[in-house]
Image (tube, rainbow, N blue to C red; front, side):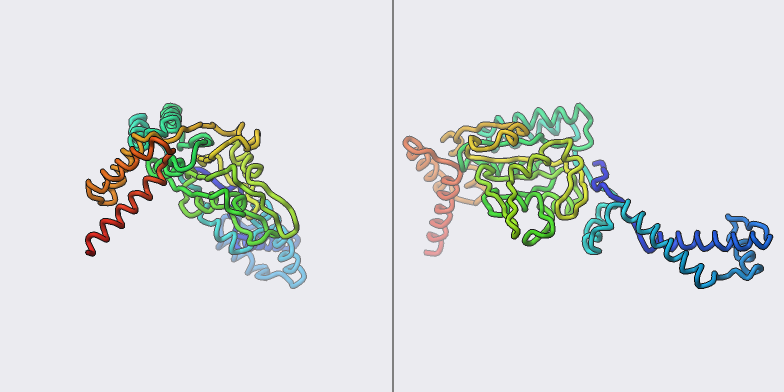
Length: 365
């Protein structure tokens, strides 16, 4: 695990630096006054020599006018340094919330090609119908190991396929296998664009985006961020009538060069968001804009075969503690229904839930 600088700004203690500047200016003026009287310069590295020098020349304090000049100059210099640090425009509570970034954030990497093989095999074993996505993941994990990357990031991908085939489940398994945080956003939610990108003051309920909050909370720079049903994303509108689309807002985050210095609308500070693994899902990518698609590895996925649905039912039924007879009944129902209907994982889960209910009812009687 390595650490990187995540915030393009410096943490600056205005009061502490102002006192240091004040001290230097104060001594500078006292030294000028003393030299004008013909006194010898004290040793600047000897604090006791300086104090004796001040005492002998009765310069323990400046007159009121000189002290006021020192105070004003120290404040102006401290203000300039604070502005250069990049955080002076923030409220105290916002600066405090970014304090966790003072020592950087962590990157989690794939340690070896063997680990990459194990992760890919584990995901494929549970979701073989997602093989095109898992194969892409496997290749990029091995490439990351060979390149000696400080952390692993999957290039932005779009999992395009029918509903209920487990696209979001695949992303959850990915984050769990890598040991990185995950955050998910439903693009169908009205304010989904703000949920991802955050919003600046002037919009209703301004706040940072969820990917940034995930990094601030976990202090891990390479989480998995899942955007579900991106083709259904609406357009957010501010109280002043300004519109903002999710697809357009995502472009700068999906492009590595711009993501490495991405400015948060809420904090108005730049962050390195280039290590995020973006997983977008859609039921059809036909309506997505070309600029967005050009930044994504588009993976077209077919419906789940009945044989895989039956295998999933056995695995999931075992996790739920269902009897063999109940799971067998679900498997037979899937095989029968599959001849004339397109089934998915949601159908299987509903059948298993009904099986659980029937088993509980039998026990109660």
